[in-house]
Length: 263
Image (cartoon, rainbow, N blue to C red; front, side):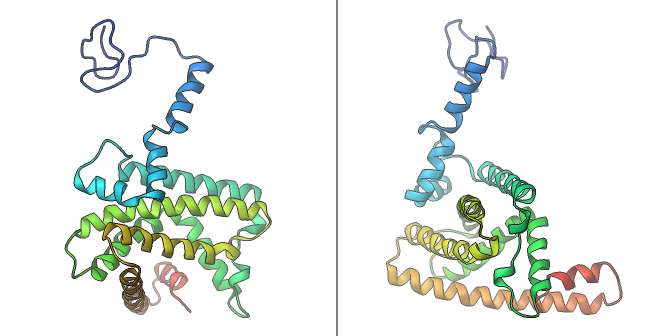
């Protein structure tokens, strides 16, 4: 008998391949064993995915710190976890656009005179949500590495890994919250502040545990991170304005930068 995954020869009574670890499948596919496989994959506590989500909530240092320290079998690796999250977020937007289009707006955040601008921002976020998530990771890693300039426990690449996990689980939190809120009739703009609060609290919680900080220390680091974020934001805005100035009259590139520049 040969393994169907790697073709290595196996003893007839083997249940798993000694080379690739794949399970030996002897029965034909039926609805029953298909359902059993799905249940085992997604709903079993011993499953990597469920264990990764639960431990990212309960003890994020075990998942993030463990992966950085070389524990690679216990949890879903960050790239796969991030890819799954992007898929779920894309699916969420498709469902919301199809069944709750009237709630996909930022009207609750708009003030007199900037309704069109807020709607444009929201449309931009919807169209490029996956790209934005990928851009946030290196940006946030720069901020956190700068904030922990005096602590060499994790380098920049390791901060990137941390944020892949962190932003993935935050996106899952946001996905669940968004669906609950639209089912209750609230537009997404109304829950954006809640999502932002969850993001700030969870990031602080993760780094508190990763660096073994006291509450006072993490509060001080959080304040410093807001300062660094504000500085980076100003720099990015200036760069956008410079690009707009240099490309003046060169459509449609200039329109793109104007659309994302704050007004």
